[in-house]
Length: 197
Image 1 (tube, rainbow, N blue to C red):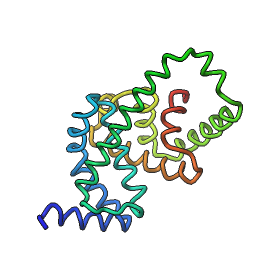
Image 2 (image 1 turned 90 degrees about the vertical axis):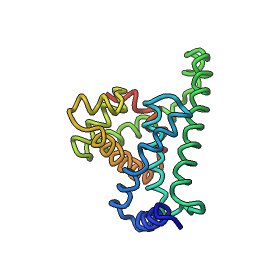
Image 3 (image 1 turned 60 degrees about the vertical axis):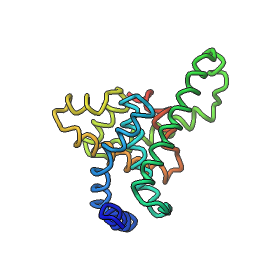
Image 4 (image 1 turned 135 degrees about the horizontal axis):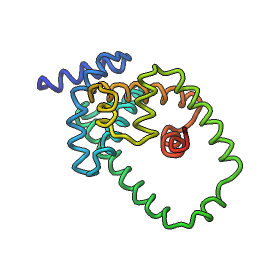
C-alpha cells in the first residue's frame, strides 16, 4: 500500500468517525484535482465548481453509508465523473424544456406544487438567517446572483479558498437541515433559488 493510499485510508476512517478536520484535509487535497478533471468533461468553469462542491457535500452526508472498495481517490474521481455526466444530461433536458411553450408548462403546475414551493422557500429563508452572516452572503452572491466563486472572492475581498470553504459549510448545513425536512437539495437550488430575493 503506497503512502497516499495509506494516508487516504486513515483520513477516510476519521471522516467516517465524523472528524471534520480530516474532511477538510481531503477537501483541500482533492478539490483542485477534481476541478481540473471535471472541467475536461463539462467545459464550464462555474458548473465545475458546483459539481465538485456537490461531490464533497454528498461524501460528508453519506459518510456512514459509503463503502469504499477501490480507495478514496478512485471513489472521488468516479463520483465527479458521474455527477458531471448527470449535469450534462440535465443540461440537455433543460434545452429541450426551453422548446416547450411557457403557457403549456404553467398549465401543468399544480396548486400542491405551489404550496410546497412556498413552504420550502420559507424554510430556506429561515435557514439563511441561521447561518453566519458571511456564509449567508456568499451563498446569496453565488447561488442567487449567479456570481462565480472567483467573482464572489473579488467582491468581498477574501480568498477563493475562503469562498469555497464558506460554500462547503453552507451547503453542508443546508443539506442536513433540508434532509431532516425531507426536501431534495437539487429542488431547493434549481427551482427555488432564482425566485428568492
